[in-house]
Length: 125
Image (cartoon, rainbow, N blue to C red; front, side, top):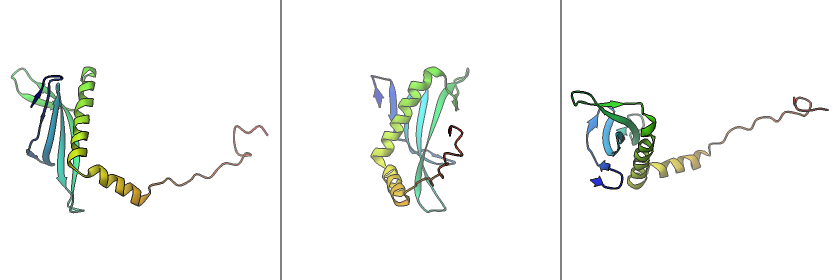
């Protein structure tokens, strides 16, 4: 699907890589964002991860994926990762599970003991 406004190509893919199955790809400029569906042998559940890569072609026309970006790619990185985030939110329950996990575990830091005024370096008493 070609979007004329920003030359964005978004496609659902079903390629299987060594780490899992690519379930969504968004290409913005020379940047490709991919959402991967993986299976955890420990928990027996599926989970999702994402990757952002720069698409480069060499002199022979072969495509290579790079992990670093030029400053002019930053807007495309932001657009690709946003598309991946929106896809995850619309097509999975990953964010809902994360909210439930945080609510159930009530992750809080332990309180630091307060220093007395005598120990405080700012104290002028």
